[in-house]
Length: 175
Image 1 (cartoon, rainbow, N blue to C red):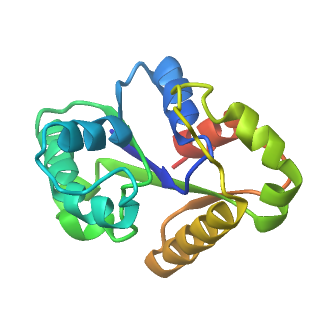
Image 2 (cartoon, rainbow, N blue to C red):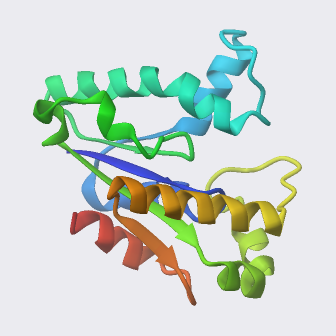
């Protein structure tokens, strides 16, 4: 099984992937790591600031990794904000039967009421250097991902009043 964990920044995608790995034994790939590999090797002119462009530049590589894992009957968790909402378009039914996805977003109210908690938890798995959290950007990013999920019929886990990674793990495993 391939689990795709997408969604906006700072919602706990990497923490969720870590907890899923611990529960299932499936390895996970952080698309932030893949992005940095492409940037540091000079394989792309895009920078860490070019999230939208990076999503569509990097996705063909990620889709082929997923196809290879499915063809080899391997399990994997892939997480990152670089999974496009139209990810299904990259696969035939043969592959789609082996892929589950969940996107995570936060409501505007949650972000405004819990911004200090979000900042405290920002590097619980990855050590973020100079991470400046912009509440307005988080709100817009979550809103955009939620709209895309509705348009594409993708399951979307909405953090409304509390953050609970175990609830997210259970939501993924129930897909």
